[in-house]
Image 1 (tube, rainbow, N blue to C red):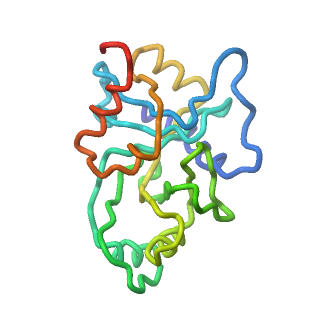
Image 2: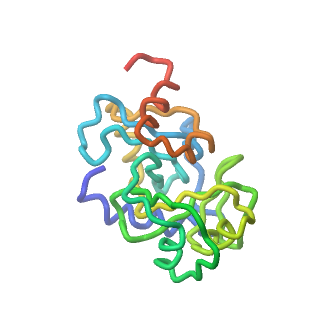
Length: 202
């Protein structure tokens, strides 16, 4: 993803929660929403070397995804909640804060299990949903649904046709995604395990 194209990619996040979204991909192209985009060994962009990106939306407007294997910091859950203006109550444990991508690095997103779908939640896979609302952390801290939450800052975005071009250049491979790998905290091996799902020896 080139820096000059980030401005156009910013509109992807706005489409995320828009009713109906953009039109489906035309022809025989298929949406990659709900799949992993895994950096190939040929990836030359240092920002994405050995990254695993969960594609949340992919349509005629472009693509929107979140890096799920790069942790920026690990903080007490109570501290993270305060950072989002929430009352932590009896929140316990730690909460890794992930680098979601290089676009709008201060914008938070919350990947979570579909046992909870709030008014702004966007369910894009059988077992995964995304919300911009930090209140999911309050529910999580109180032992309610969602039972699994991933905190991310920033996102990865592609303008129309850009992701398809990068795929043709063998920068990425597409493999099946699931909540088990998304929420797994063994981030140091997540890329290896994700790329192993690809049948072709890269």
